[in-house]
Amino acid sequence: MTATVGERRKSTRFDLRLPLRYRVSQKGVENRWSTGITRDMSKDGVVFKTRHPLPVGGHVELRIDWPARYESTYPVDLQLTGFVIRNEHGRTAVRISSHRFLVQTTEPVELSKTA
Image (tube, rainbow, N blue to C red; front, side, top):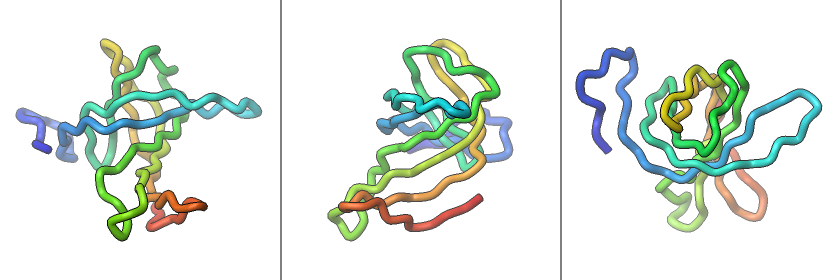
């Protein structure tokens, strides 16, 4: 994990390749989960590789497979919500509006929550 060189953003971005699932939120529609992989992340945003461009301005939910495990046993997901701000070359950029960690036991357990 390294910081991106020559970065002009307020938050440092880190090159991370982590599997994720995402879906675009649309009122009254149950959208399917699609898969992707992160390219880089910061506390404010994430860029991930997608097969198809997502609608700019669209609200999106992401679940990133976090590399750490809770109590060395249970998988952890980083759940993010945010808005698509850009699509370029098969990559989608999302500005994060909320995040929380979920532990995958028989029922998801929330470790922390921010708004």
